[in-house]
Image (cartoon, rainbow, N blue to C red; front, side, top):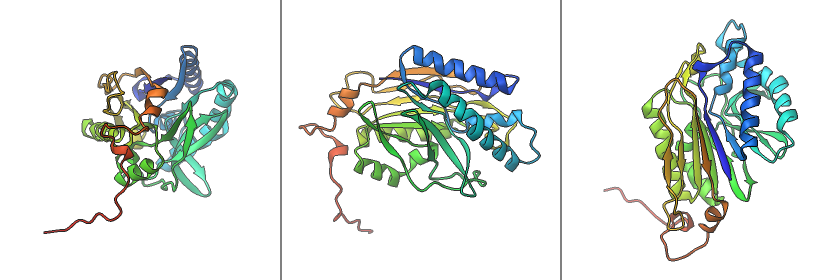
Amino acid sequence: MKCSVVSYSLSEDPGSLEDWKINLKEEINSFIKNGSKIILYPELFLMGLSRYFKSSTPLDDIKNVANFVTNILLPELKESFGGNDILLILGSGPRLYAGKIFNSAPFLYRGEWLFQDKLYLTPWETDFSPGEELLCFDFGGLKTAVVICFDSEQPDLAMKLKRESIDLILVPSATTNENGNNRVNRCASARAIELGAAVVTSPLVGDSTCDLIDHNEGRQGFFLPAQEEITMKQEIHSEYSVANKVIGHYEIDVNIIKNLKNDNSETKPFLKPFNSSLKIRSL
C-alpha cells in the first residue's frame, strides 16, 4: 500500500488562493494516478491560507481559515476525490465546532470527511481547545489512527493504542527546529517498536507571516517495527528541509504488519500484556 507524504513548504505558497487550490488538486490527483492509497500532509499547513485573507487579528486569521476550509475547500475536494478508495489526510488546521476552536486533521475516509482533533496542545496553541477522543479505523486491512504532532510524544496515548492493537499511525507535524522534529521522529520510531505498527511523519517546512506558523523545519520519517518479519529497511528519513517542499513515497506491506500480531518465539513488546500488579519502590 503506497503512502505519499508531503512536507509542504509555506515559503512556496502561490500568489493567489485560486492557484493554491489548483496546485493542491493537481498534486493529489497525480498521487492517485501513481497508485497512492494514503496521502499525508503536515500539521497546520492549512493555516498557510491566512495569507490570502486580510484579517485584523490572529484570532480572525484562525476563524477565516476555518470557515474557508469547512465551507469551500473540503466540499470541493470531496467532489473531486470522494469517489476514490483513498485515505487523504489534509494535515491539520483550525475547525470551529460547538463554540470552540480545534486544531483538527480533516481526513477523507470512505468518501466522507472526518476530523481528528489534536489532544495535547503546545503552549502557543492558546486559541485552541484540546480534543477528547482518538479515532481508530480500518483502512486497507490495517487498524489506523491519525496522531497530530505533540500527541505522538505522549506515553499514555501510546498505552491506549497498544490496547487497540494499532497497525498504522500517521503523524502530521509542525516543528520550529531540529530538536522538535527529533522529538516527533524519535517518538515515532519508539511507537513503531512498542506497538508493532508502521508510523509515518510529515513535517511542515518554510516561513509564513502567520504568527502561529512563522518558521518550520524538519524531515519525514517512515518507521517499521524491529522484527524478523521486517526484511526491508526499518527506518527511512527524507532530506532535512527548512524551506523547500519534500515529497516522499513509502510502501507499507499490509500482510507483514498484520502478521506481526501473531505470537511466536521472537520478542514482541506489543504482544506483552500489561502488568497491573507492577509496583515501583522509591529508595
